[in-house]
Image 1: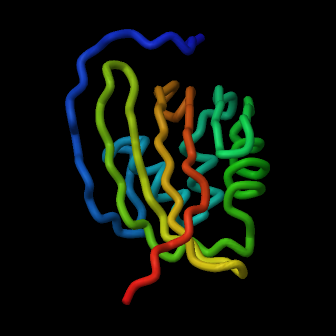
Image 2 (image 1 turned 135 degrees about the vertical axis):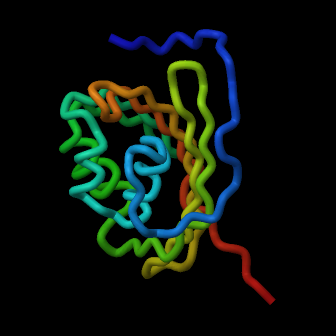
Length: 152
């Protein structure tokens, strides 16, 4: 079982600020990148395939703390049930940034989102550890839906 203690470890940048295509990525590209791309497509099947069935999930959004212990719960009730609802269209994956962090991986991603109330930027930072080739431990911090700056 993985705990929440932070061990000092080697931090080696793997990729920095890259524009992401919304096409698929394999696990060879890193679980974090594959996760961000699948979330950007709201791809239920891919998200569930990336998450271990017994994933240890905790997250924080501006108004709430979240916990889940199954891939179905994470995807159906949190990611695509509460955070990004049916009416939220992820228009663009603006950026994906990944780093190795000792035995974990960090992925930061930014989405451009449109819904009935306007256009927004949503940025999240996630930390994950693999288990059996899938994401077994996942922590996400979300900045929330931020109004997109008006372009002149």
